[in-house]
Image (cartoon, rainbow, N blue to C red; front, side, top):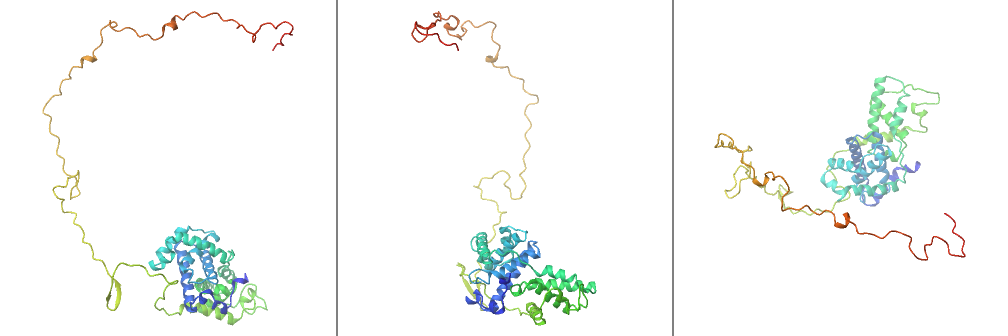
Length: 378
């Protein structure tokens, strides 16, 4: 696992820096991509482990590729898609893209191309090869809870300190700390920071011995105060960064062909707003030459139907006599109709046939010819 940790000099010599992106811009891209993964995961009710795993994949990916070559939001969706399968909380690719569409602007979502799903699925194979199929990632969360159970002191203050440290761990995902130090060291440093800010001083802990000068000495070794201070400052720098105007997206998008004409207004360009088409008054009746269909009214109610007129007769008409061709036939067979001949004459009176007997010839003989033995009975 040591191959996934880099020093600060290597973090400034990434493929993005070699591609003309300065260090501050790259850190901003990393922060925006990590924050996007966190927001998307929270929107889809994914656990903190899944979200953190996706962010670690994201940071590791851009240690081998440039932000100019692979848009960060497409990579973020791909990392979250893979992390969901690794952490056994899978989500469909189309659902991740749908959630991302609601979080991104039209300009940022344009980096997904014409087929966003195919873009993410294709990038997944590149991601797996980049991280060398090393899918299992540990996070500071489990170590944070493990270390907090060994501390002694006021329970309310301890709970407040742990909650603050948990928040610092979440925010540390927006930095490159996951590429610099093991999760055990990050957990110790952020618990130290949370203890200072919440004024919770650890004076005793479970398993304390004489050789343990500080509470974290029983968990990690050779951790200096300078190292803890450096990790704390990297997290605190997230809260002290000034808010400036947004920088252009990465990679730069090609200009879109537009048909609208822009015009100057107060020194700024804005698109020409097309004239609003007046609405059609549907209450105006159609011309007289248009046929009136049933229930075509302009009030929404069906037209009144006049009642049927009363019959001109008071009593029902008598039943007319039946037709003559339906009357019963006279008794007896008709003299002009003969009974049909059902069978031919030879059926009732067949011609005489000759009696059956053995045929004459050499192939059928009742007795064998002279000089031959009789046939063996069957």
